[in-house]
Length: 420
Ligand SMILES: Cc1cc2nc3c(=O)[nH]c(=O)nc-3n(C[C@H](O)[C@H](O)[C@H](O)COP(=O)(O)OP(=O)(O)OC[C@H]3O[C@@H](n4cnc5c(N)ncnc54)[C@H](O)[C@@H]3O)c2cc1C
Image 1 (cartoon, protein in one colour):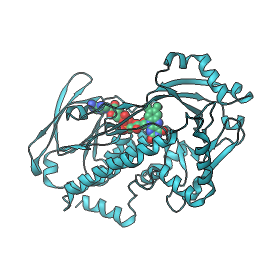
Image 2 (cartoon, helix red, strand yellow):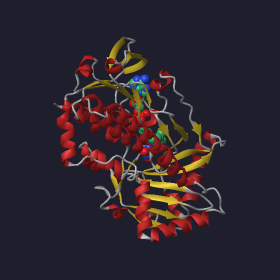
Image 3 (cartoon, helix red, strand yellow):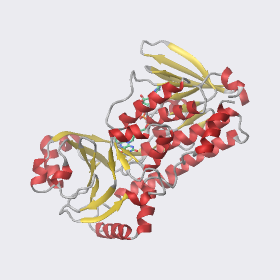
Image 4 (cartoon, helix red, strand yellow):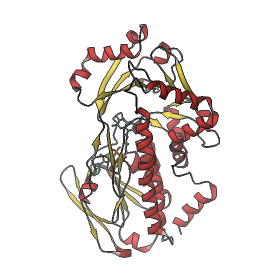
């Protein structure tokens, strides 16, 4: 690492969510010292993202955590579109992705299962100072050129203030990013016309509904929803028009009626509902992923509908690509800063051209009984044509826009250069 880096202290990563932890690990693995600042006292345990796409599993493999994650998850080998009468209109098998990824399947597992694995690997590098219960409350740029950096002000739970200096700060502090606000960047997200209702059941739905795939999209003029099989439960996700009163939607009898409509006959009645909750769906894209020496990644930089399960996956891709580019700058590689800018612009453009449109396409036209037959016919054509099926799954998995794992020599080179 270059001299100025050492004199300015380690890179600060703000936020110990999946994105901040991945970025910190990528940096530490290339020999960069990091300080990871997290306002919570422990890692988050809430149920949030549940889907890991093949592109993300390839990258997590490089970081040494995908095998342990897979052991805790449910491997999903096909995606299915069906109607309420049980007619399967289309089914795509992930095995067609063999040759495009080392993981031709998606993995259903809570994101809270990933973060402890990343933290353990990060700690094992010996290059990370991880500070829980530490909230960033101030950030200002100091100096310029090679000696420039950022002065961070943090506060612990007891109100004790600490000021530290860093050559760069990577802000992975989530959708309500304080760093974004401190940098004076816009942060207002645009809400979608629907919010999501998630119903959780421990009842094994695939035993009640013949042939139900662990990733099923029910598309029907009477009710459209997604069914996701997790290792120990199933989730049904419905889209609810934004004006609908949430208390009415969450009333136990309303949830029960919705589930019985979604799974007609005895199947609906046999479902034991464990919990139901709603969450908002919003779209946001930061105009630029950096403000001087503060770089943005993950939910701090972009949000989209949870349809397709892309946002966290894209955030992990941000962390890898930005982490690699920042490591190169700190090593003093020739195109350093320019390459970092290119990487950040590419990450932003992936959201604009792939993540947001693909997520929105997943649910477009579902509310129109007139459009539904054409959409189902198009999916049937995709499933019937092997090349279209591969293309569909590559795009759904972000394999065409994700950073690729560094193989053999390239990876060894990156690590050894960092230790020169
Ligand atoms: C219900 C739900 C379902 C979802 N399903 C999916 C899915 O299936 N697939 C998918 O890809 N995505 C999904 N998402 C989105 C996914 O959860 C997020 O994209 C992901 O958590 C983003 O990770 P992150 O690390 O950027 O942010 P976060 O996970 O939000 O982490 C940010 C961290 O920063 C910390 N922090 C914030 N401010 C400060 C500060 N000032 N100082 C220090 N620390 C700070 C926070 O405490 C937090 O730990 C879902 C989201 C929700 C809500």
